[in-house]
Length: 199
Ligand code: 5GP
Image (cartoon, rainbow, N blue to C red; front, side, top):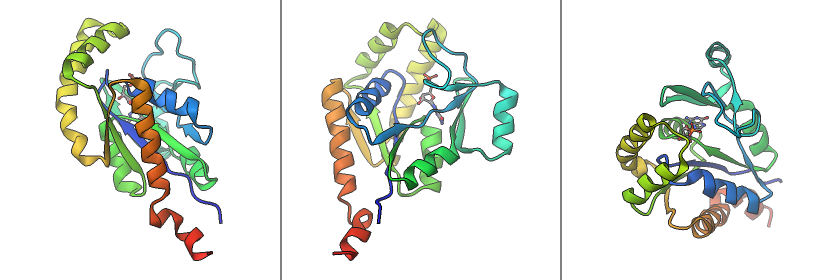
């Protein structure tokens, strides 16, 4: 019998570099699919609809909430973000691993609904480094950057609700750690139950 895919939920404060680490993880692993979220946020330069996000209007987002189309959704920095439910479960059932790169509120909701998920929190090597990364990124207004930095301080405390913490000092090394976590998770007895029973 086919092994079900693993639901990987990755969060971390803005500037921890989770986007870069997740991208590297996806580049290295053909069996992991990124779940593309729906958002009411405006696209940033270079972001393509259907690749970075599905960009949508608030009314349409609300309609999707009513239709229970989301596994979870949350308001983050004044915009709505949601994970399309059906695609995630279809992929998991077909044996593909699915990566959700979502905020803490969303991750906590998923944890309640889907206990079998693997919850990973990415942190920067220091708060000073996080600040420099946010400044370097240059995609935010000054106000939004300060807002994100202050949020980061609060958010770090939520690490204790996760299964793993990965310090992102260097993208390659942080990605290695993510791969090690996935490998270990695949060896967990409850995931290999069907295989063991068939021995
Ligand atoms: P950004 O606007 O920088 O792309 O994302 C802002 C925050 O929203 C990030 O922490 C990102 O992980 C989170 N996010 C992206 N998609 C989703 C989603 O579908 N659900 C939730 N809860 N958060 C999301």
